[in-house]
Length: 76
Image 1 (cartoon, one colour):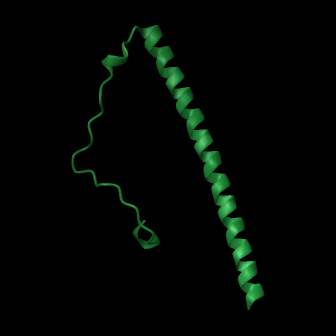
Image 2 (image 1 turned 45 degrees about the vertical axis):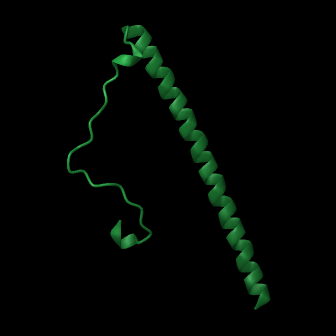
Image 3 (image 1 turned 120 degrees about the vertical axis):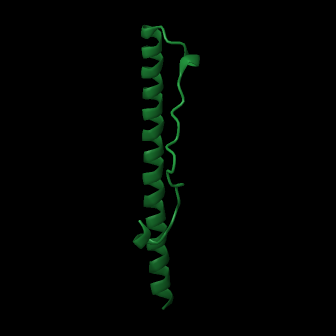
């Protein structure tokens, strides 16, 4: 039984390592995308003579549901 628990623990650690690696790669990709969008935004502002203070806020839709987090797949 101890060997099975040990093997299960090893697989759990391996799974957590894989998940962590995937999240780190996703975070790097998102940071790169954010930098790229920021660069494009500045370029468009400079070429179009748009001041950063001229930005318009996008209003939230009325009646839109609040985001929720659930672990129950039937609610997805």
